[in-house]
Length: 242
Ligand code: NAP
Image (cartoon, rainbow, N blue to C red):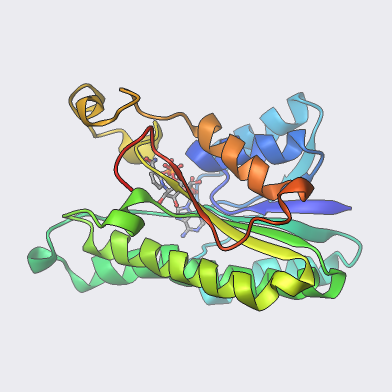
């Protein structure tokens, strides 16, 4: 059985990506950290549309949990193969660098950057054996442009962009593509506190994006037909500077 693992699948962009993967016929592994109720809602929506999947909770900022839970799942399911990995789980914890606490730096790096590394390394093995895979990393406009107040988040996302380009070159000849999508402002819990009315003036398309619009791009990069696209960063930002 072919599976798609979506980290941070309980809410926002991750939920839409889970539904997209299910619509493409994948058995979806819905990862989340703590919000079981929302994760169950994602799974329910998958099932309502005729798809299949299961919850796989682990904290991507903890290498022990990644090894224990995800590694354990892979070992226990030799006939299920993760063909698509969407590294979507992410957090921000903003503040000017001069006031930024150690924990704000550490937690944002661990979740956004280390999470990518430890999750991907584990899943990569199966893809290499089967000589097929699609890895899509959800980064951010901040990782391309840098945003004031987000030195930690911009650095983490820029780190994932560099890793995307490097890994794409390592595994290209093994039938595995590695790409990133870089959303601008998308309507989710993460942007809840932002003033869309004010910010839409700087967005050429004049609105925030929808999680489904990011999922659409992820679905494209995850398709078999996208085999010749790798090491790319696709912006989904309504025309904001990239
Ligand atoms: P969101 O609505 O805040 O959802 C975050 C998701 O990540 C939740 O499912 C959450 O799980 C999960 N998560 C957070 N920390 C985790 C951890 N340590 N381990 C496992 N799961 C974890 O965020 P979003 O807006 O959909 O963002 C998704 C991705 O897009 C992030 O990487 C974000 O940086 C990126 N992004 C978002 C925007 C935007 O405008 N929204 C723009 C650019 C980039 P729980 O529900 O269990 O907490």
